[in-house]
Image (cartoon, rainbow, N blue to C red; front, side):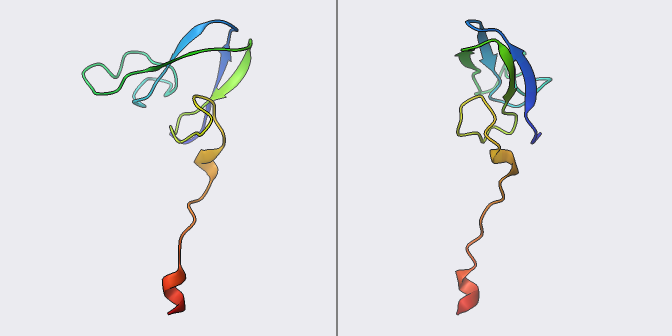
Length: 82
């Protein structure tokens, strides 16, 4: 599940962000983590708007997608020069 999910958030509302990746939409907790070591991350929306929430769990922007899912890993190929 690489791509973010567009979710309508309401300012001041509390949400539970899925940290296990097993919820139906992959971003908002639906209890699928039960029995595992995962705990959902609580967050409060700062504005009413459609937001893109991270589904790959690699975002440096908290629960919000920062495009990190699309970045390629840089490979160190220095060993080829020897």
